[in-house]
Length: 146
Image (cartoon, rainbow, N blue to C red; front, side, top):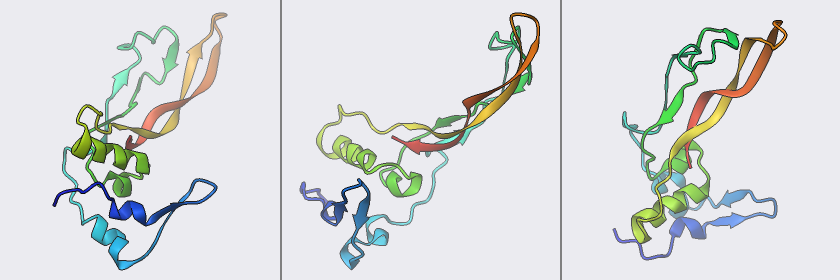
């Protein structure tokens, strides 16, 4: 099945003024025909645990609680149909097609964090007092391909 440079799914996509995408619902362009059922491989982009102590990071002189935390990380391959599976932007699917069909020097999309949760900590301040702080985007909670 050779790609002829004319994308059938691209023809069915129209851009509105606000930048949202709308696809037609014709039988030729319906999602089931474009994206076959996909079985997730253990190597696909996914969230992984990584438990670490602030002692290991040499931050325990300043952060007194919690002693450990799990920042989590994203790792894995990004399948071709990732836009529908991972909620990736259309640009990512186009980048994958460029890599596969036109120019392998263009990097493949990468598995990266998409959403995060904050981390609450107790710190020792310069004056010796203890402070409660909340740091945004410290724990990855969802991955995507970009």
